[in-house]
Length: 344
Image (tube, rainbow, N blue to C red; front, side):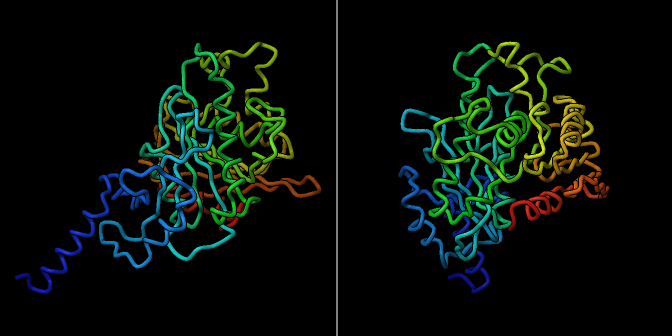
């Protein structure tokens, strides 16, 4: 027979095993809601979420976030799906939401990769409803990829807004975020017109506009620094695909994160984006992460960061603030940006 302490240890280990989570999921404290062998269905969300009430979570997965994976958002003929992350705690009807877009050079990557899952889990644990979406992938020479990839990301925003009631989301408080190629796509979703811009839908009845943008070390101008032109687009149309050329005073606030040791996407790309936002008087924050390489989440291996914040009053006067941190973690400044732009 077990002693009482041994019995409690056994029960905790059994409960942890019963979660069926992969090591990364345990590390990120993600609990998958979908039942084994059953397709994900948004209509089942209330029942699946309610089933977690009173469940014993363990030291291996305290304060989890809940994930419903592989939801259809582009139609039954599309293989690309999205993952939905929900906070633990009482249900609300007015949570802000974030759509996260994975990277991978436009040819690879996935919505459930570690970076995407890590950022999504961090934001959901802070109270946000988060969607991590896939989009069509392919090389520059593959027909039908551009601007379908942009349209897919806009459709992820439309999906959140169209299902705001079921998700408990405020449809006016949606942000978009992404890393690397996803940073570019996030900027394009946020800065270019959702009807007339690349991948726009002139006849869409649901808006893809967002209230804030987070760009994590994204490419912002393909024609600079050896990146080449936007694939499959005529010379006359190139400018429409460059986020730094799309900035105007009507754009939502932008947060840029970039590391000084990034050898994949030159940090000059983000400096150019920040300069374009400043010229257009778009409120933004640019956080330079000292020593960080490419593809980091909100917990980069680095030695600290410097944040420059620029805002403009209604009379056109500029306010500039600079803050520094000796700690590399980016959770606090990211959540601070989201709190001020879409609430919490």
